[in-house]
Amino acid sequence: MSEENNPFDKAKESASDAYDSTKETFNEAADAAKESARDFQRGLNDTVNNGDNKKLLAGLLGIFLGSLGVHKFILGYQKEGFILAGLTVIGWITTCVFFGIFIVMATYAVGLIEGIIYLTKSDEEFYNTYQAGRKPWF
Image (cartoon, rainbow, N blue to C red):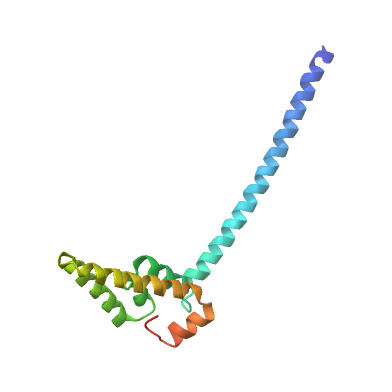
């Protein structure tokens, strides 16, 4: 009878070895994924919590919400932010007169262009130009 169980014992042992090997591989992959997530979290925290350079935030807000001037408020340019927001509101109100849509398109273009400019500058150049140098437009 031990001879009959011998192939089953070998199969059981092989399955156990495969299970252990697979479990070890998945544990290593899980550890690598956790480390990668920690690296990403540290990078995100450095980017978000760094009050010295707001390049990424201002650039993305310029692209997506530029017509409302949100990127200007982030950089501390309240007057310019209110100008963009006011022109956008006036543009939407006057769209029934037809020329308002051009005002909205112009404010969107300003935000889009500024967002792209912000993101293409180096961190040092962005900081010197828009935060230290206080250049309000383009």
